Length: 162
Image (tube, rainbow, N blue to C red; front, top):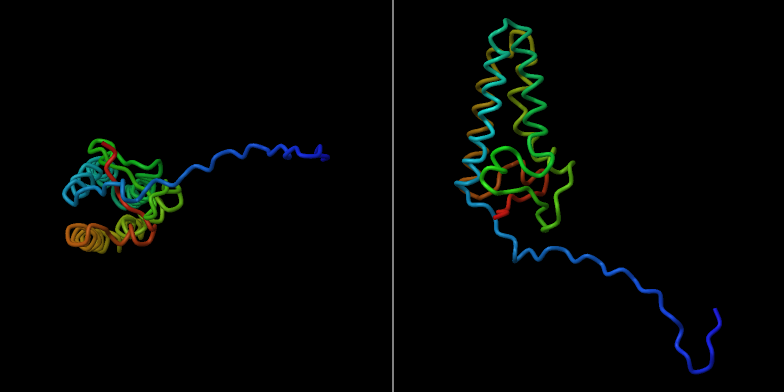
């Protein structure tokens, strides 16, 4: 490119970089709201378990498969049913939008019980105690620290949207 004497070269206009959301403007969801959102998310899971779990062995195993997919993918779009109702969403801990991968990783602890349901016969005995233990630990962590094991695994936070 040649430039006439005394003329400044034309600069290509760079698109403005989108600034990251300011973490100080993000409002974390209240602990009670997070627990309420989880309880709302349990409703469809309970309906699915009741519909499939009464069928001996195969139904219980299939319920485990369906519940594993449900809990793993419940907020893959950023909001689960409970989060949508209560006006919260999942974000990265740095304030950026959470990727689908991090939203799946944050739900890994919740599938321990449903995975056990897929074990023939043994699942009847271990799935419920393991699910209870996971929910108990996750609930205690949310109520005491404001984040659960899944939040640490996925490096996510739950924030208010309204």
